[in-house]
Amino acid sequence: MQAGKPILYSYFRSSCSWRVRIALALKGIDYETVPINLIKDGGQQFSKDFQALNPMKQVPALKIDGITIHQSLAIIEYLEETRPTPRLLPQDPKKRASVRMISDLIAGGIQPLQNLSVLKQVGEEFQLTWAQNAIISGFNALEQILQSTAGTYCVGDEVTMADLCLVPQVANAERFKVDCTPYPTISSINKRLLVLEAFQVTHPCRQPDTPTELRA
Image (cartoon, rainbow, N blue to C red; front, top):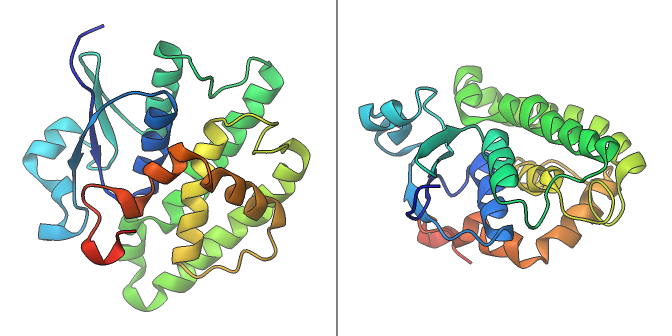
């Protein structure tokens, strides 16, 4: 592997970036952050320099081991394969499938529907309702699934990739004023995860590019 500190291109509020930050923290990987402001200057992700790095014009992107990887779950899987401790995918194939199912449900079935690029297309007047409906629809399914897979966390009693997806999505739900009372399993798992150091140090309120008024 190529020497040198990994570089994470991130936005403090990006839930996809937060997933990767948690994985890096859990695995004890020291890295540099290059903030990409998704709003300033019309969106720094649209700059020529960043497009050359990630043609999809999205965060996160991770430079590591001489390569650049886009898409949060692909990044987490690469970290898992190259730096397997602590494990974020269970050894048991059935549990591993559950972790990937939950991760894909959130990363593919909820988050993209309430993402900034989609909300811009919806129009400002309808953005809140659109985001709420997308999250509620996904959480209705997720709550039911977690009731059969959860232990302390999303799948059993060890932190997995599914948990890395859950916490940022609950934060999105709170930001869009979704009532999480109907989702006790989601809420209780989220509460247990938020006390863990890796989830605290990577929180959007504690990033290099977090605005002063949002820092904690």
